[in-house]
Length: 267
Image (cartoon, rainbow, N blue to C red):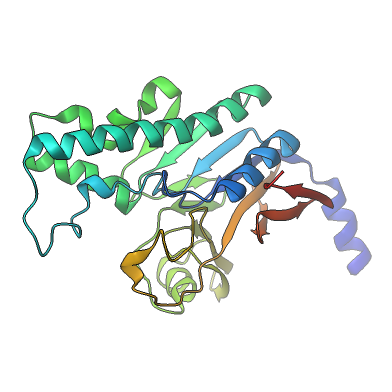
């Protein structure tokens, strides 16, 4: 049985390959972790790229920032937003330039809850549609397929979305139990995996951590609270029968190994 299983797997051909990144939160990114992904793109040469959302921090339009105090006049908010938008666009340029070098054109941008803050801002000021997330990031011109916050994206037998439907300590179990599908998401900034067998077979849920700076200085809103956040990203292979294999690549202190090769994001 084992030899037969190995033989059947050996016949399968990799149909396509993706690199999937979780929450970066530009301009609060961890530079070394981002560099690890950029170097991995060059080595792995994916033909699909998926961003799971929260590309930007978008502090300038955060609903939490002015929950207890009055928002300043609009012109001040716009000044901060323009500076932040330039930084997030510069960050996305890093990934786009790396993808362009290897000829990857199949790019997917899934909106996160932070990204959606921009859309809420435009709802409040409808005469400023240029500040919607998809517009301020020029996603159409960049060649991205865009998916609104909460939207599930299917590639083969795997679904992607930003996350947020379930956020308890066992959130991967809740996702796979309630959705009954193979799903990968971000949002929680931790790495988890859970498998459950349904009537139609086994399904799994994965989270991929984050790529943001996890220091106390850049996360003062936590007020010293300890977290289980970690840096990671995903490499996914789809075979010719649309089954898939996921490698969750953990990044520790700006370093990781991909296919046995050391990737040092600090260098």
